[in-house]
Length: 395
Image (cartoon, rainbow, N blue to C red; front, side, top):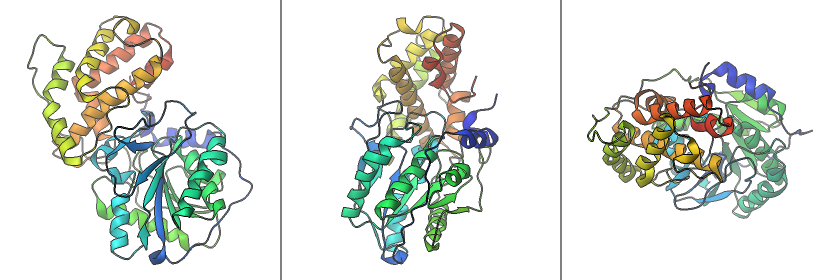
């Protein structure tokens, strides 16, 4: 079975069958010349500032977070495991291109960057009605009050295309010109989105390449070219494609076992802490904290090691209440710990899915979580508790 987020055929099939809200028309707001326009970003990557509560698991959290222009201490709060998280760990601009907009404003390409930007969670209900009727219009009013002219909308997970296209309709109807950057052309066409740049990039990488300013600027310029259209839907494919198999594997040396009294995954996590600390010092941000702190990573791995060895999941220290949220969030934090430090240790560029593959295929931690997942599946534990412990399709 292929890994879902890396399988282009499976992704297109999923998008083509996704239930979508219906829009009978395409609202279309014209705008001023680009060099006179104020631009804002709206993302469905569930970004939020470190130390704030963020977003709830499931499809009922329709609130949005406000991201001030000068803030970079942002966490990736999206719960889905089915997109490449390593790109954001390496470079937040691959999801939230705030620095690229600043450079374009400095170069006179756009007029100004908005003082505030906004984040929703992409995993919404089938109708996306709460965003259509409540938080979306409210967000539009905020941007209009700040005299925003253009909104760039990005997403990450397989469900995000439905949400970003819905937001485009809401914002255009309010009088804001929008450009959606999406990998799901079928969804954009079925939803009659006003303007969309169709990018064939892996999920989680709407701007294509982390740490590649030139490439990211080129994607944004292609998106902005759609603002010259006079009616919609206006959908254009970006000519450069990026696939899951592109790029080099992450080359990160792993430490030898230092303490034979500890489970190898626990020992490994402890030995890698200095690399994580260097990564945090460099980027000044971390997405750890959905459920556990960085200090709790080794103890959490010890729990999964016990499950892998045959102990029942509800006897190792995980709560039986909110079990789904706690276990998913804990794995998110463990994987994030490894992916962020991998970006510090890597001797090669961070390619598509490279940190995910390194984590599950090469580290003791990733292997232990996969073993625990198999043990839960074999013990007939409800699949809602174990399925999301790894990317769909992983065994």
